[in-house]
Image (cartoon, rainbow, N blue to C red; front, side, top):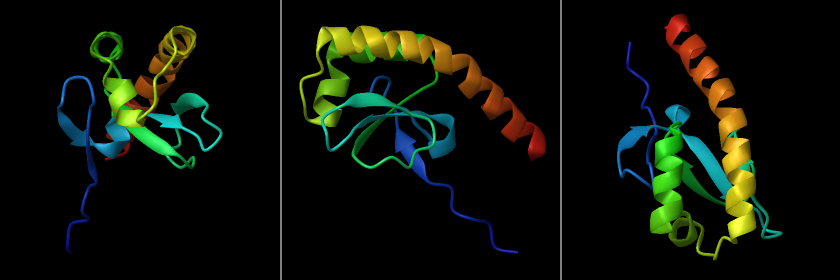
Length: 103
């Protein structure tokens, strides 16, 4: 049986190529709201980050999200994203482990 192609994406912070399902998508919606998209299906311009807080901090320091989303991300949005990222990290890691168990 032919193997399915796994879509790869690059983390904007560490520049590492990984399967799309192992990354967290940050999206800028058409209404210019910046938020975390766990489904990967929300409309708008997206940027991908590893599930690590260190990558999020690096992206903030290097303004990688600003470049990837083609919009200046305000400091208060970074603070909100940081809080959301910490909440989402546990959920994301749990989903990643359950997907690995299924294989």
